[in-house]
Amino acid sequence: MRHHRPLIVALVTLTLVVAACGRGEGELEVLDARSRMSPMLTGVGAVYLDVGNDSEVDDQLLGATVDPSVAARVELHETFDVEAEDQGMGEDAEEADPMGEHDAMDDDGEMGHDAMAPSPEGFAMMGMREIEALDIPAGETVSLVPGGYHLMLLELADDLAPGETFELTLTFASAGEVTVNVEVREDV
Image 1 (cartoon, helix red, strand yellow):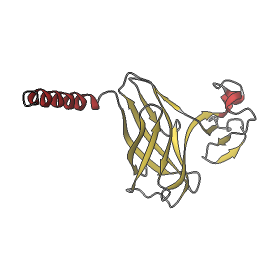
Image 2 (cartoon, rainbow, N blue to C red):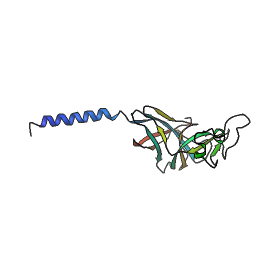
Image 3 (cartoon, rainbow, N blue to C red):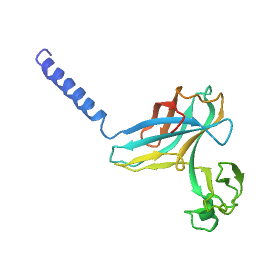
Image 4 (tube, rainbow, N blue to C red):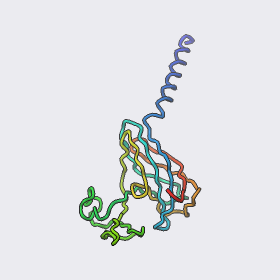
């Protein structure tokens, strides 16, 4: 047994080195997680961030959670052009909102119900809707930004104040749960 001890130590050391070297490769990296209160609605906030997929495997963001002291729930949303959807130009328009009952945001950032034509100034009406998952392709970075994909904090326990931070746990199909700190900012 004594003769095998150096071999066992060498094998254990090699295994640990290989595991440590591979740990940072092929994982998801979440960067610049930031939040703000919604300028449109009371009791609602939004989270924006970047997800880098440095692996060779596609993944999906399935959802997120926060402590109830921050918000009652978190939803994954997308922003879309209401007029394009109403004219059947949007991707899967009928499947995504078959009754035309999506929320629409006018040019002043006010939420309405049902789609409306663009304002007299010619600006498009934008709407928001919850989605089940967001693809995170291998080798790419997907950004959750204002006017695009984002996470909605619903039923905030208290107003979000600039300078505060809170933990957000993201759930991915392959990578599992990833917890990040979110910084509350005035401008995101």
